[in-house]
Length: 206
Image (cartoon, rainbow, N blue to C red):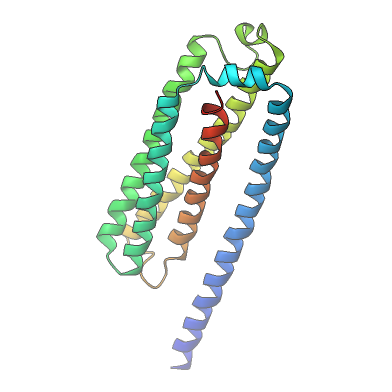
């Protein structure tokens, strides 16, 4: 009996430690993206007109679609955690797979958006971009760097959720051991929040 109680205590300690570790990691990510947002703000104040004209060249339709996709994916991620905690493994797995699909859909949309800009010759260090005004060069450089880093985080998130889906299927995680999926959910929500800031900064400032 004492052994069983010890196991429960150890599980709670591991849970608290895992949660704390995830929040510390997310704090470092906030600092990282916060620095980029600060850099964006400084250059936007300096080159306001060029930033506005550059934003007009981005696709608000694709940007809006990607925002809806990520917000919807956050809902399904939250549902997957809730159902796992209730012991409904099948529904949890289903919602994890839907979240993965939505994340991949986001990346496909971003690929087509980038591909169109590249087709127009607008990409870092391209002759077309370097012939533009300095403010436009900075805008598109920040656009590629910040949306590219965000896309990388989405890809990492999709990969981690795929691992969690495998864990859910083989019962490595379950109603009494869901911290891994919960931490994955925190990471995914963070990725979505970053996009919520990126979307108006790059697409809605015209």
